[in-house]
Amino acid sequence: MNLYVALELSNSKWKLAFSTGENIRLLNIDARDTIAFRQLLKATCEKWQLPESTEIYTVYEAGRDGFWIARWLESFGINNVVVDPASIEVNRRKRRAKTDRLDAKALVRQLIRYHGGEKTVWSVVRVPSVEQEDQRRREREVKRLKKEIGAGTARIKSLFVLHGLEVNSLRELTERLSDMFCWDGQALPAHLRNEIEREYQRVEFARAQLKQLERERATRIANPKTKAEHQAQKLHKLRAVGVISAMTLSDEFFSWRDFQNVRQVGACAGLDGSPYASGDHQGEQGISKAGNARVRTLMVELAWSWLRNQPDSDLAKWFEKNFSRGKRSRRIGIVALARKLLVALWKYLEKDELPAGALLKKTVTA
Image (cartoon, rainbow, N blue to C red):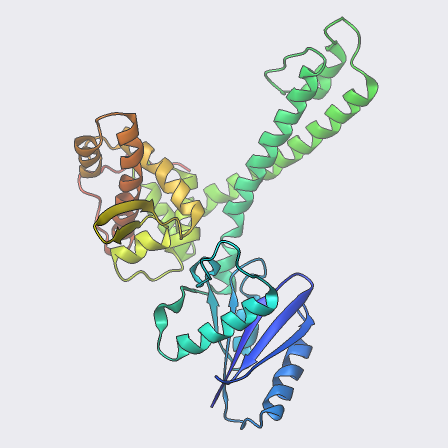
């Protein structure tokens, strides 16, 4: 007999659903209370008189808590799966009941079906190692810093506009503030001046951090040590592939996944199609968008860059042949090109197959 446990996670409480395939037992513990979980697991086994040889299977949805729970459960011999929340079956009624109690029950029932052989009941998320998960942090921080700089810059300019000033550059703003006046020639109000100075300091601090990360990135590509860095260096040799694209694709996508075929590559980025066929109706709903959103967005941007920098490649010629009829056609086609390009880059990394007609950079500088 097996014991199945579903963990419905929240920031303050965890709802646990225990089952052997018959009854379901629901219990609560404080979030992240690992000792209480072990105690309830032992108490449930004793209550149901389960032998020590009982196999324990657990499941929880991927989310804010990340993958430490999976590593913790597996550390003491529990077979755990992490699932994509969007792939879990739900009632299609417009007003369906939803509570943690109902979700936990549904999750443990689907766990029983999954281990009973119904492997398509949901999509299982691959759990990266601590090192693989950590290597993604730097590029994500770079993107976040750029957003912070952009938001801070926009706030400062908006504060000037409130008093009739238009400032196009924030260069050496602290020194220039004393020479700036409102629309009527009056000095800037004291509190406004102080607020602008503080906001400018935050922007400059973020800029300094960004420059440091960009220097580290350049060093990593120039002198690769890890698998991700070697892949990034190889990608960067291609025309149209910049430093950011190369590092993001290697860190987020290629370096820690073992793709078996092109369908897996497209599906993992959410760039595979979603056909709709019911009765006489046949149609396409567009891409699934079920994969890595960062990679998907990046590949669309990279596809446009590929058209500009690799116009003689087979991919660019295929795009121009099939999607040159207008703006709408090109917007649709660029997504198809993004998928084909992602597959081509995977083959380039794994099988050393240079995309047909593509050129390498003469010199590569980070």
